[in-house]
Amino acid sequence: MTDFAPLLVADRGQPARPIHLVDKQSFNDWLKQRPPEDRALLEAQRFDGKTGFAFALLPRGGDFEVVSAVKDARELSPWCLAKLAESLPEGAYKLAQGEPGKAALGWLLGQHRFDEYRSNIDEPERGPRLLVTADAAMIDAVVRLAGATALVRDLVNTPAANLGPAELEKAVRDLASETGAKIGVTSGTALADGYPLIAAVGAAAPEERAPRLIELEWGKPDDPRVAVVGKGVCFDSGGLDLKSASGMRLMKKDMGGAAHAIALARLVIGRRLRVRLHLLIPAVENAVSGSAYRPGDIIKSRKGLFVEIDNTDAEGRLILADALARAAESEPGLIVDFATLTGAARVALGPDLPAFFANDDALAAEASQSAGEVGDPLWRMPLWEAYDEMLKSDIADVANAANGPMAGCITAALFLKRFVPDGVSWAHVDTYAWRDASRPGRPKGGDALGLRAIFELLKNRYLPD
Ligand code: BES
Ligand code: ZN
Ligand code: ZN
Image 1: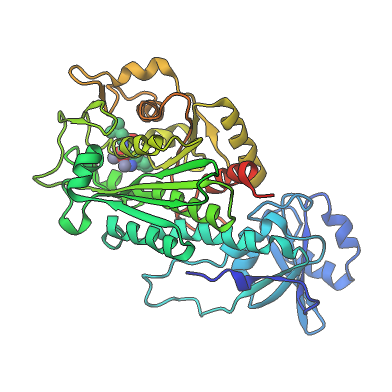
Image 2: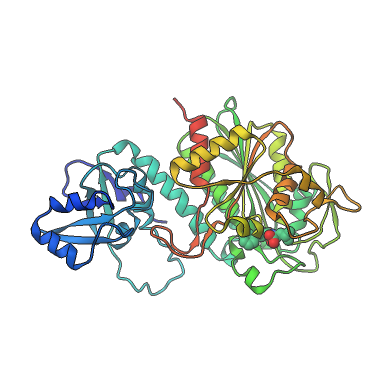
């Protein structure tokens, strides 16, 4: 994985090419201060300071300076330097004015590639682009954020054949051995006894891709308990209710929630937040075989609720239900789950906006505030109790899918809510974990959506003094 640490360095007076950031407002005044040859050059290149992410190189004494147009030069977005980091030649750079702040993240991620599966990389290998900053105190935190984001992207991009439940387990094991956290894995008959829904969803997968619940614990016993849960469906074929070809095409990403949860745990531990962290990853493959669970099956969940399987493609909520029940047993002060749970969330909000649910208005307000602070949006959706009846089963306590096509992400969230005790503060993030079109610093493919927002929320609550 990309080593981000060398790419963001403290200012010790080392030589660095200046980057001038201009916007619609400041461009003309800035241009007036420049030598006439710069003006001629910029005019010839039709650089007008208005077009987002446009940049130009200005010759300066055998080397060059950079000018780049951003939306607001006084309030930098995380991505406004990403295009530069992707495009500029090797070397050290420094903002001509001010410090990069949030934009350092895009500088780092603009240099991350997932090229594990490329034998002939067409671009020649380019050396690192370093960003020099006088704000040395923020370097570690930004490097960790970039690392966590890249981890989500890499895990999601890895094909299902190379990333099954065992590899998700390895990702958690790696985190445990890096940090001294404790890991526990439940599988086989213990899984069938203790977590019947996880075992049922994973039943069709071959032995080497057997279902499991992966748990990690970290922190001091007296600190407030926070549980983080992530949907780890390493491939979602739909099961016997098989998906169509187009519906299945991206389903290697159905462990995106798990990737977010693991990355969040890594951030929490890296920042040493004052929490007792409980990470739970139910990891399965929703496959097809003679041992697959079936529509019409009724399974007694860990919590004791009988669930009738209406649709084997609504598998995420099943594995999360048992994991949420387990999380609640330790009486946490907060549970957060991440899941690529429904297509309906995407129909409602599109690819960029994770659907956010909370049973606690104060928590929802904090989440929306944090999301705004870090430019990682979340959109609150209602846990509209009246729709609960859409999950009615004729013969069991609840069905795993609604009987109609409406409000799909809400009924999915309402299903989960049944497994979270009243009084436990809970947030649910229904995220796409994917980007269909490349943007600067955010290539097409797996992506973290909602991760930084929730980490900011946790930081605001639990940062050590
Ligand atoms: N993994 C899918 C949800 C999904 C699909 C997320 C496409 C992002 C993009 C989930 O397991 C699923 O199949 N959900 C069904 C539920 C339905 C059967 C009630 C859905 O959303 O169609
Ligand atoms: Zn599914
Ligand atoms: Zn799924």
